[in-house]
Amino acid sequence: MPQKVAIESWDPDYGVPSTEQAEEPDVEVDAGVEVPEERWGPMPAQAEERPGVLMFIDGVRRIDANAWLEDGRSPVRQGMFASFAAGAVRVVHQAHVDRIEVRRVLFAPGNPEAFATRAGTYEPFGVASAVVDASSSALQERLAASVADDADLVVVDGPLYRRQHLPRTIGYVKTHRVHYLKGRPAETIAALAEGERTPVFRFRTSWTRNAWYLRLPGPKAHAWSGVVRMEATADLPLDETVALANLTAAVLPRHASKPHKDPRAPQNLYPIAGLERELRRRLGDALYVERALRAAAG
Image (tube, rainbow, N blue to C red; front, side, top):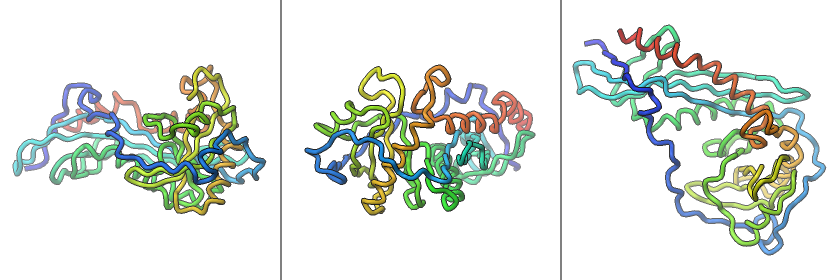
Protein backbone atom coordinates (compact mmCIF):
# COMPACT_ATOMS: atom_id res chain seq x y z
CA MET A 1 0.00 0.00 0.00
CA PRO A 2 1.45 3.41 -0.97
CA GLN A 3 2.11 5.85 1.83
CA LYS A 4 -1.08 7.71 2.72
CA VAL A 5 -0.85 11.15 4.31
CA ALA A 6 -3.51 13.15 6.14
CA ILE A 7 -2.63 16.74 7.06
CA GLU A 8 -3.67 17.79 10.57
CA SER A 9 -6.28 20.57 10.61
CA TRP A 10 -4.80 22.42 13.59
CA ASP A 11 -2.26 25.19 13.13
CA PRO A 12 1.12 23.42 13.36
CA ASP A 13 2.27 25.80 16.09
CA TYR A 14 -0.22 24.17 18.47
CA GLY A 15 1.35 20.78 17.94
CA VAL A 16 5.01 21.66 18.01
CA PRO A 17 7.10 20.01 20.73
CA SER A 18 8.02 22.36 23.54
CA THR A 19 10.76 24.79 22.62
CA GLU A 20 11.68 25.44 26.22
CA GLN A 21 15.35 24.81 26.80
CA ALA A 22 16.12 21.68 28.76
CA GLU A 23 17.37 22.25 32.26
CA GLU A 24 21.04 23.22 32.20
CA PRO A 25 23.27 20.41 33.45
CA ASP A 26 25.86 21.00 36.17
CA VAL A 27 28.16 23.81 35.12
CA GLU A 28 31.86 24.13 35.88
CA VAL A 29 33.24 27.66 35.44
CA ASP A 30 36.87 28.80 35.39
CA ALA A 31 36.93 32.60 35.51
CA GLY A 32 40.73 32.76 35.73
CA VAL A 33 41.56 31.91 32.12
CA GLU A 34 42.75 35.34 30.91
CA VAL A 35 43.20 37.15 34.24
CA PRO A 36 42.77 36.04 37.86
CA GLU A 37 39.20 36.34 39.09
CA GLU A 38 40.11 39.06 41.63
CA ARG A 39 41.45 41.25 38.78
CA TRP A 40 38.33 41.08 36.63
CA GLY A 41 37.15 44.37 35.16
CA PRO A 42 35.89 45.80 31.85
CA MET A 43 38.39 45.50 28.99
CA PRO A 44 38.31 48.21 26.29
CA ALA A 45 38.45 47.21 22.64
CA GLN A 46 41.99 46.82 21.36
CA ALA A 47 43.18 48.32 18.08
CA GLU A 48 43.32 44.96 16.35
CA GLU A 49 43.62 44.47 12.60
CA ARG A 50 40.20 44.30 10.97
CA PRO A 51 39.25 41.02 9.26
CA GLY A 52 39.55 41.14 5.48
CA VAL A 53 36.50 38.89 5.09
CA LEU A 54 33.84 38.66 7.79
CA MET A 55 31.10 36.02 7.47
CA PHE A 56 27.82 35.76 9.38
CA ILE A 57 25.92 32.44 9.47
CA ASP A 58 22.27 32.08 10.48
CA GLY A 59 19.41 29.66 9.98
CA VAL A 60 15.64 29.53 10.36
CA ARG A 61 13.12 26.72 10.59
CA ARG A 62 9.35 26.44 10.26
CA ILE A 63 6.90 23.68 11.05
CA ASP A 64 4.75 23.54 7.91
CA ALA A 65 2.22 20.96 9.09
CA ASN A 66 1.63 18.01 11.36
CA ALA A 67 0.31 14.87 9.67
CA TRP A 68 -0.79 11.27 10.09
CA LEU A 69 0.86 8.58 7.99
CA GLU A 70 -0.20 5.02 7.20
CA ASP A 71 1.20 2.48 4.78
CA GLY A 72 -0.75 -0.69 5.59
CA ARG A 73 2.32 -2.34 7.16
CA SER A 74 2.47 -0.54 10.51
CA PRO A 75 0.10 1.38 12.80
CA VAL A 76 -0.90 4.92 11.90
CA ARG A 77 1.86 7.22 13.06
CA GLN A 78 2.29 10.94 13.47
CA GLY A 79 4.65 12.93 11.26
CA MET A 80 5.80 16.48 10.86
CA PHE A 81 6.61 18.50 7.73
CA ALA A 82 9.29 21.13 8.34
CA SER A 83 11.29 23.57 6.23
CA PHE A 84 14.81 24.80 6.97
CA ALA A 85 16.99 27.50 5.47
CA ALA A 86 20.54 28.53 6.32
CA GLY A 87 22.68 31.20 4.76
CA ALA A 88 25.88 33.21 4.91
CA VAL A 89 26.44 36.95 4.61
CA ARG A 90 29.86 38.05 3.41
CA VAL A 91 31.17 41.42 4.59
CA VAL A 92 34.22 43.02 3.01
CA HIS A 93 33.41 46.67 2.36
CA GLN A 94 29.68 46.00 2.10
CA ALA A 95 27.47 43.11 3.15
CA HIS A 96 25.87 40.75 0.64
CA VAL A 97 24.31 37.31 0.80
CA ASP A 98 26.98 34.78 -0.16
CA ARG A 99 24.94 31.56 -0.26
CA ILE A 100 21.67 30.02 0.94
CA GLU A 101 20.48 26.43 1.30
CA VAL A 102 16.85 25.34 1.75
CA ARG A 103 15.65 21.89 2.84
CA ARG A 104 12.19 20.45 3.34
CA VAL A 105 11.94 17.38 5.57
CA LEU A 106 9.25 14.89 6.60
CA PHE A 107 9.95 13.60 10.11
CA ALA A 108 8.19 10.40 11.13
CA PRO A 109 8.94 7.13 12.94
CA GLY A 110 9.79 4.12 10.82
CA ASN A 111 10.68 4.54 7.16
CA PRO A 112 8.65 7.39 5.66
CA GLU A 113 8.81 8.04 1.93
CA ALA A 114 9.73 11.26 0.16
CA PHE A 115 6.67 13.48 -0.30
CA ALA A 116 6.48 15.64 -3.44
CA THR A 117 4.46 18.87 -3.50
CA ARG A 118 4.34 21.86 -5.82
CA ALA A 119 6.26 23.76 -3.12
CA GLY A 120 9.08 21.22 -3.20
CA THR A 121 9.85 17.67 -2.15
CA TYR A 122 10.09 16.77 1.54
CA GLU A 123 12.99 14.42 2.20
CA PRO A 124 12.14 11.52 4.54
CA PHE A 125 13.79 11.40 7.95
CA GLY A 126 12.86 8.32 9.93
CA VAL A 127 13.12 9.64 13.46
CA ALA A 128 11.00 11.45 16.02
CA SER A 129 10.22 15.15 15.60
CA ALA A 130 12.49 15.98 18.52
CA VAL A 131 15.39 16.19 16.06
CA VAL A 132 13.98 19.26 14.30
CA ASP A 133 16.35 21.58 16.17
CA ALA A 134 19.30 19.27 15.50
CA SER A 135 18.50 19.22 11.77
CA SER A 136 18.47 23.01 11.66
CA SER A 137 21.84 23.14 13.43
CA ALA A 138 23.29 20.54 11.07
CA LEU A 139 22.35 22.65 8.04
CA GLN A 140 24.07 25.68 9.56
CA GLU A 141 27.08 23.57 10.47
CA ARG A 142 27.47 22.36 6.89
CA LEU A 143 27.19 25.91 5.57
CA ALA A 144 29.68 27.27 8.10
CA ALA A 145 32.16 24.56 7.14
CA SER A 146 31.86 25.54 3.48
CA VAL A 147 32.79 29.19 4.11
CA ALA A 148 35.19 28.96 7.06
CA ASP A 149 38.32 28.58 4.93
CA ASP A 150 37.46 31.70 2.91
CA ALA A 151 36.92 34.01 5.89
CA ASP A 152 39.10 35.72 8.48
CA LEU A 153 36.28 35.55 11.03
CA VAL A 154 33.03 33.54 10.96
CA VAL A 155 30.21 34.54 13.33
CA VAL A 156 27.59 31.82 13.83
CA ASP A 157 24.29 33.00 15.28
CA GLY A 158 23.79 30.89 18.41
CA PRO A 159 26.07 28.67 20.51
CA LEU A 160 29.16 27.17 18.91
CA TYR A 161 28.07 23.59 19.69
CA ARG A 162 28.98 21.10 16.91
CA ARG A 163 31.04 23.79 15.16
CA GLN A 164 34.02 23.92 17.54
CA HIS A 165 36.26 22.33 14.89
CA LEU A 166 35.80 25.14 12.38
CA PRO A 167 38.71 27.61 12.08
CA ARG A 168 38.27 31.27 13.11
CA THR A 169 34.64 30.60 14.04
CA ILE A 170 32.80 32.00 17.06
CA GLY A 171 29.31 31.51 18.43
CA TYR A 172 27.16 34.61 18.97
CA VAL A 173 24.56 34.21 21.74
CA LYS A 174 21.93 36.97 22.04
CA THR A 175 19.77 35.62 24.88
CA HIS A 176 20.86 34.57 28.35
CA ARG A 177 18.80 31.82 29.96
CA VAL A 178 21.61 30.93 32.37
CA HIS A 179 23.98 33.29 34.19
CA TYR A 180 27.33 31.54 34.42
CA LEU A 181 29.34 34.08 36.43
CA LYS A 182 29.12 35.16 40.06
CA GLY A 183 30.82 37.67 42.32
CA ARG A 184 33.31 40.08 40.76
CA PRO A 185 33.02 38.55 37.24
CA ALA A 186 29.23 39.04 37.33
CA GLU A 187 29.70 42.63 38.52
CA THR A 188 32.03 43.20 35.57
CA ILE A 189 29.20 42.47 33.13
CA ALA A 190 27.06 45.19 34.71
CA ALA A 191 29.98 47.63 34.54
CA LEU A 192 30.70 47.16 30.83
CA ALA A 193 30.54 50.27 28.66
CA GLU A 194 29.74 50.16 24.95
CA GLY A 195 32.39 48.19 23.06
CA GLU A 196 33.95 46.76 26.21
CA ARG A 197 34.25 43.06 26.95
CA THR A 198 34.86 40.86 29.94
CA PRO A 199 38.00 38.77 30.28
CA VAL A 200 37.85 35.32 28.71
CA PHE A 201 36.48 32.55 30.93
CA ARG A 202 35.86 28.85 30.39
CA PHE A 203 32.79 26.82 31.26
CA ARG A 204 31.73 23.25 30.82
CA THR A 205 28.23 21.77 30.58
CA SER A 206 27.94 18.81 28.23
CA TRP A 207 30.85 20.36 26.32
CA THR A 208 33.63 22.84 27.07
CA ARG A 209 34.16 26.25 25.49
CA ASN A 210 35.84 29.58 26.13
CA ALA A 211 33.60 32.62 26.29
CA TRP A 212 33.41 36.33 27.00
CA TYR A 213 30.66 38.94 27.23
CA LEU A 214 30.54 42.09 25.11
CA ARG A 215 28.27 45.13 25.38
CA LEU A 216 27.01 46.56 22.10
CA PRO A 217 26.11 50.25 21.65
CA GLY A 218 22.57 51.26 22.56
CA PRO A 219 20.34 52.39 25.43
CA LYS A 220 21.28 50.83 28.78
CA ALA A 221 17.95 50.14 30.50
CA HIS A 222 19.39 47.47 32.79
CA ALA A 223 22.65 45.63 33.54
CA TRP A 224 22.25 43.18 30.64
CA SER A 225 21.14 45.68 27.98
CA GLY A 226 23.03 45.09 24.75
CA VAL A 227 25.13 42.27 26.22
CA VAL A 228 26.00 39.27 24.07
CA ARG A 229 28.06 36.18 24.83
CA MET A 230 30.75 35.06 22.43
CA GLU A 231 31.94 31.44 22.36
CA ALA A 232 35.19 30.00 21.00
CA THR A 233 36.58 26.50 21.00
CA ALA A 234 38.49 25.55 24.13
CA ASP A 235 41.14 23.94 21.91
CA LEU A 236 42.59 27.29 20.81
CA PRO A 237 45.74 28.58 22.53
CA LEU A 238 44.97 31.39 24.97
CA ASP A 239 46.70 34.08 22.92
CA GLU A 240 44.59 33.21 19.86
CA THR A 241 41.40 33.21 21.93
CA VAL A 242 42.25 36.64 23.37
CA ALA A 243 42.95 37.91 19.86
CA LEU A 244 39.50 36.69 18.78
CA ALA A 245 37.91 38.38 21.79
CA ASN A 246 39.63 41.68 20.99
CA LEU A 247 38.63 41.35 17.35
CA THR A 248 34.95 40.89 18.19
CA ALA A 249 35.02 43.91 20.50
CA ALA A 250 36.54 46.02 17.73
CA VAL A 251 34.34 44.80 14.88
CA LEU A 252 30.88 43.69 16.03
CA PRO A 253 29.67 46.97 17.61
CA ARG A 254 29.81 48.54 14.13
CA HIS A 255 27.12 46.09 12.99
CA ALA A 256 24.77 46.59 15.96
CA SER A 257 21.17 47.38 15.02
CA LYS A 258 19.20 50.45 16.15
CA PRO A 259 15.97 50.29 18.23
CA HIS A 260 13.93 52.26 15.68
CA LYS A 261 14.81 49.68 13.01
CA ASP A 262 14.78 46.40 14.94
CA PRO A 263 12.86 45.45 18.12
CA ARG A 264 15.73 43.10 19.02
CA ALA A 265 18.33 45.87 18.84
CA PRO A 266 21.21 46.09 19.37
CA GLN A 267 21.89 42.34 19.67
CA ASN A 268 20.30 41.45 16.33
CA LEU A 269 23.20 42.56 14.16
CA TYR A 270 22.26 44.12 10.82
CA PRO A 271 23.86 41.37 8.67
CA ILE A 272 22.08 38.67 10.68
CA ALA A 273 18.74 40.51 10.63
CA GLY A 274 18.90 40.99 6.87
CA LEU A 275 19.90 37.37 6.31
CA GLU A 276 17.06 36.13 8.50
CA ARG A 277 14.51 38.09 6.45
CA GLU A 278 15.88 36.61 3.23
CA LEU A 279 15.89 33.09 4.68
CA ARG A 280 12.24 33.36 5.70
CA ARG A 281 11.39 34.63 2.23
CA ARG A 282 13.16 31.61 0.72
CA LEU A 283 11.06 29.26 2.86
CA GLY A 284 8.04 30.42 0.88
CA ASP A 285 4.65 31.66 2.01
CA ALA A 286 3.43 29.48 4.87
CA LEU A 287 -0.18 29.34 3.62
CA TYR A 288 0.92 28.45 0.09
CA VAL A 289 3.13 25.65 1.42
CA GLU A 290 0.31 24.32 3.60
CA ARG A 291 -2.09 24.31 0.64
CA ALA A 292 0.54 22.50 -1.43
CA LEU A 293 0.82 19.83 1.27
CA ARG A 294 -2.96 19.38 1.43
CA ALA A 295 -3.23 19.19 -2.35
CA ALA A 296 -0.49 16.55 -2.51
CA ALA A 297 -2.14 14.56 0.29
CA GLY A 298 -5.39 14.45 -1.70
